[in-house]
Every structure is written in structure tokens, then in C-alpha cells.
Length: 115
Length: 108
Image (tube, rainbow over the protein chains, first blue to last red):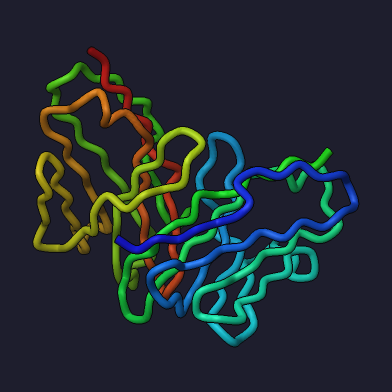
């Protein structure tokens, strides 16, 4: 099956700093990548969709200047949480989709704690 | 209205039981449908795609009813290892929307 690797799996940072999360498709070319956030006991909420080489499309209510997404290659997308605050603490998960295939495959997730 | 609605459960069943989960979606133009499984504090993993004709994979059967905008998952002969949260997922124009998940606890 398709493998998506996300790094780091866990990060603790100070309020006001920025954190970068990487998402890599290891054995396929990810034409589209998705970033989600999941709060405890809640479902995954789509934050943004990015296609390789173009700007990300953000969901309503997600600040694009705060959550910077870069999808510079067919195997790598990054999410940078800028000026993190404690309320940004959450589980961030990426997923990747290849071309016309309908399934998406998920990274392992990153648990972000902002102190 | 939420894109995808699921009963959160939990469903507590004994080993060997048959259990069914349901899910409804709001956008009639949705193109594809899936069930994912998520273990505690882990990422979701694809369990199976869902087709109008129905599809079966071992003990798991998924069904889609487009007219009613309804998706189901049936698990037969439940195993302890089936304990997890089952997420109903709908793809609308290349965006994936998740239900809140149905928690299943299979007990010995």
C-alpha cells in the first residue's frame, strides 16, 4: 500500500515560535495533499488542500497566514504553524492522494503542544 | 449542517457479534466514499472503499445508498482487534470530509 511519512510525530514548542511539519509520500507521487487538525474526541477537520506547484486552498476559518503550506514537489508538503499559541495545540495529520485515484493515505500525525 | 454524520457510539459488543454502523452525507454530488479505521492517538487507515453495488472484504461489508445518501459498514464475527473508531469519509470534488467516528469496543 501507499506510504505517507509525517515528521515529527510529537513536538512541544514555546508560545510565539513557529513549527514546521513535513509530510512525504514515500512510494508514490502525491498530486494532492491535505492537512487536517483533530482535537480530542473530535473528527478530523480539513484545514487546506494543496496541489503540487500551486497555492493551497484553505477551508473557511483557517488563517492562511498562520498555517503556511508549501507543496513544492510531488513527494513533499510542509505545514508551518507560525507564532504558535496554546490553542493551536492539536493533532495535525496530512494525507496524500495520487492522480485520479480516489483514496487518500495518511501520515502518522504530529501531536503539537504549545506551552 | 455537517457534511457527514455518524452515531458516535460507543458500541459495546461481545466477541463474535455482528455490528453495523451507519453514516449519512449531505452533498448529493459526492463522488466517492470510504470507511477508515482509527486507533487511539493514531492516524486513520483505509479500511475499504464503498460502492453502490456493495463490497465485501472478509468479515467486512460496505454498502452505499445514493438515493438516501446513506453508507453502512457491517462487521461479522467481531474480534477483539476490531476495537477502534470507524470513520465514514466522503470525497466531494477532491476534498475529503470525515464523520465524527463511531467507537467500537469488542469485549471478550
